[in-house]
Length: 159
Image 1 (spheres, helix red, strand yellow):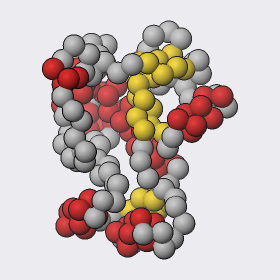
Image 2 (cartoon, rainbow, N blue to C red):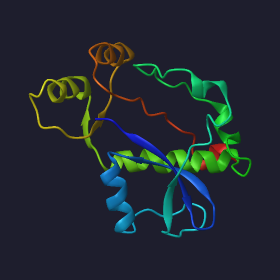
Image 3 (cartoon, rainbow, N blue to C red):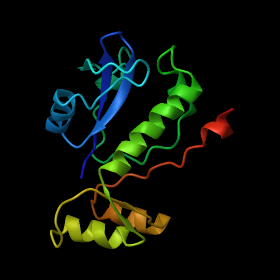
């Protein structure tokens, strides 16, 4: 299952990311006022263009067919000048929590269940669990869309 990441903005111009299963999922959550700004709490949210590649040479290069697993990027905290490291970690924690809340924990059976879903031997659903680095690479090599979720430091560790 693919995850769509949208850049969002509230009515007070606070920018943040939202992770969704589909555009319909975004629309449904917004209509039901489930989306709120992590900074001010308002539910008046809209999608906005990403600032990541504006004015860079990357916008003229073709996208890779198979994206690589992203390594942690410390520069994410500087993406918008008003975002500090602690806020970036809070936002990342919220995104990961949303994925956890909308997926089934299959534990150490992750690779097996992901294959069953991919090869239509089990119902399509969002799952999460544990996989070894070897299992992760094997799944990616088979064309199974998965992401590795980082383990983020606690708020106490950040201070």
